[in-house]
Image 1 (cartoon, rainbow, N blue to C red):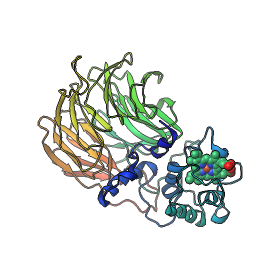
Image 2: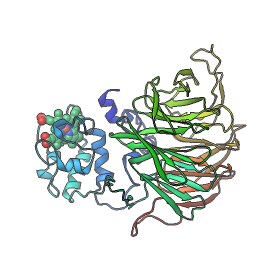
Image 3: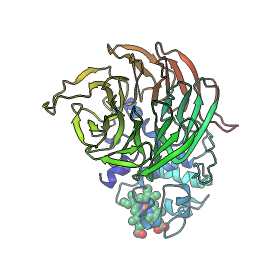
Image 4: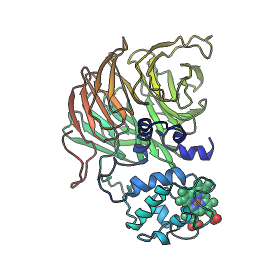
Amino acid sequence: MDRGYRNRVTWRLSNRDILPELDDGVDQLMKLIPLLPLIMLAAPGLSAQPSFTRDIQPLLQKQCQGCHRPGGASSDLDVTSYAGLLKGGKRGPGFVAGKPEASLTVSYIAGDTKPRMPMGGAPMDGGDIEKIRAWIAAGAMDDSVAEVSDNKPPVYLQPPVITAIRWSPDGQRIAVSGNREVLIHAADGSKLVQRLAGKAERILSLAYSADGNTLVAGGGTPAQFGEVQIWDARAGKPLHTARLTNDTVFGASIAPDGSRVAVGATDNTVHVFETATGKELYKIGNHENWVLASVFGADSKRFVSVSKDRAAKVIDAASGAFLENVNALRTELNAIARHPKKDVVVIGGEDRYPYVYNMDRPKNMKIADDTTLIRKLDRQDGPIFALDWSSDAARIAVAGISPAVNVYEAETGKLSASCKGHTAGIYAAAFSPDGKQLATGGFDGRLRIYDAANCQLVRSFIPAPLSTGSAAGGAN
Ligand code: HEC
């Protein structure tokens, strides 16, 4: 993938080339919503005070980071952090707080100093230049989360976007993504039991081993590194941490027998690790775009990975050999879940339809043949980002840009209920191990737990421990 393309799609949930596709106002909003959460550490601010994290970093990430990042930064300037921007490049600091007119960044993006930045690209939008100017003029406040070198737990001023949720197999705990940590809550919402702090800024996927002993967290720090963390789930102790690629990793899954962990990456491969040692066993490079999710087959011998390249591919988990394509290519795929007992998967992504497929394809089937498709569920109100299949096999949950999670009867494909209450996109959905409840979370930072049968809200809370005085909170 070339650099320019990567700059525009550094974020998992950004749609490639969204701007040319925008057609009407509503669609426009729907397409911009998914861009926001993963390029910000927190839900939208309540104050008008310019924020580095909320207003500035996303601009730099999209338009500047391709050239100004650690490891070969143009003109020695690294804009991937507040500290890097402040330190600046060959010509001095990137900005002077309170003085936009004396700040190199402003001078370069406004074209007062040549070559105008972003170099070789279209000039920055006037409104965006104004944002940077205003932030510097207001004192260039640093509200970014500091790199945790001292293992101090992160401080939350606002509820962070929820990107991953899993229940422990005994149903007692719920693991939820936080900033640079995994938050382990008692499933009844009574308390925060553990905080599993790591170095990765974002946790984008979580998976428990079937025996509940191991918790896998996949994520990383965008444009810097991907990370797979393997935890002793009961003790809350890190067992192994593996870094890979220079971007976050996606869709971590663990084999039912606990032996292996698979994650997708922006290098278009699936990386497979030995759970016991944390050692990378192999990587599989037969996708043509980012790999965003994976799931193992019931016997742990195979797994399926899905990608923005539209393919769901079956891989031999022992050797890493490619076995077969599951689906007819239709749409970029973001999510996958498996039937609790059978090798049947549900996949979904940009075209908004969940597709239920048999993992097994007769050997002599042609590429475009789609007879392994068992069922296509209803079209959703937006792209799909999360799927789960209840362990009693009865239900499939479908979540995405639309702020409602739809629950389907797996046998008939009939919509059984629609879980409402979230105010924006949903990035994680997980059934409780007994199949009776469904936990969901996303952009608004609130975990909601519904009765899976009728979508009645059972309880909801903000999993991140907000620092006192913060404006967020409340009952729903
Ligand atoms: C395609 C690569 C590329 C992109 C994208 C890019 N830059 Fe640059 N940038 C450069 C190069 C190369 C230089 C050195 C130019 C020179 O010395 O003549 C530079 C220099 C700079 C400098 C001066 C640093 C110093 O102290 O020497 C600043 C400030 C800067 N860029 C800011 C930005 C900002 C802000 C963006 C995003 C809006 C951006 N750049 C996007 C390549 C890029």
